[in-house]
Amino acid sequence: MNSWKRVIHEVKADVSAARARDPAAQGVSTFEILTSWAGVQALLAHRVAHELAEAGVPLLPRLFAYLTRAVTGVEIHPAAKIGREFFIDHGSGVVIGETAEIGERVTLYQGVTLGGTGFQRGKRHPTLGDAQAPHQRRRIFAKIFGDLDGGNGFGKDGIGAFLDDPCQERLLPDRDTAQERRLDRDPGTSSRAASRPAPGSSSARP
Image 1 (cartoon, helix red, strand yellow):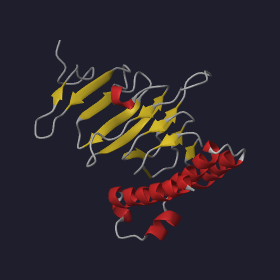
Image 2: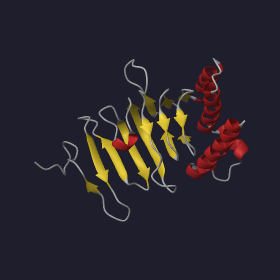
Image 3: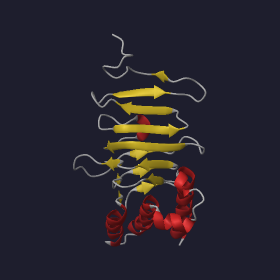
Image 4: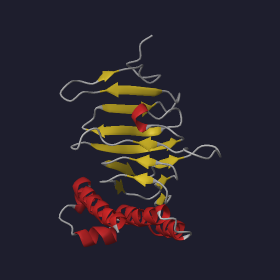
């Protein structure tokens, strides 16, 4: 019973996150968000499927996940661990793998993949930690593969951007060379490049 109470509290937090991060959801009722926001629907179904999987219920969790993917376009494995105040914005194409772990106050955008590599068992999907502070929101626009810690960057397979908001760290993989460029930006100070600019850019130095 305590598990299902936790699910109810998590869903309430998820709805609040949708209302806070999606301008279109401001002033919209909870019922309308639950019935009209595909990302919220996918997360609601996952919360239920995850609890069923944790309880050892066969088949039903995977059936929930399968039907959710068919209806919303969002695929979340029932075993994936997702924290509070999670939001999927324009969720079509989002994939979250079996051993993925997502912290609190995280937002994923359309087309994000938290995928695995190879055929090994055990932890093989990314981990995305909490936003650094309660007023921050961690935003992901990327395809990330393998057992990588989001706090340490993507590695060569990352495509997109990994952002904290307000921005403390920004990781931008170079699409041409698969090398990362990192910009560290402290609130109230100017940005500073921590590595070379992209090849061919006007700011590149010999």
